[in-house]
Length: 66
Image (cartoon, rainbow, N blue to C red):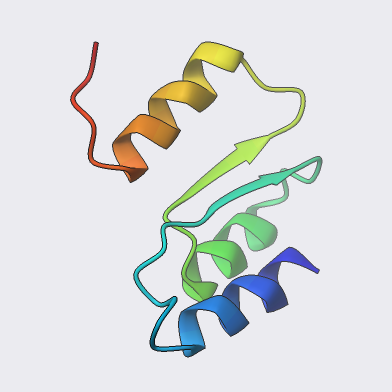
């Protein structure tokens, strides 16, 4: 599951700074909260807008906005 995977990634020192964006078909508030608490920096619900996803990825990588 994505939340457990995120927790694992964030618990490994070599990977802890890797930005995680959750992409899921679930939009329930608790899923969003649990994802962010696990270490995800952002959350995207399917279906998603491609431009919005690219903007979130750019932000996660520290790239300037177009």
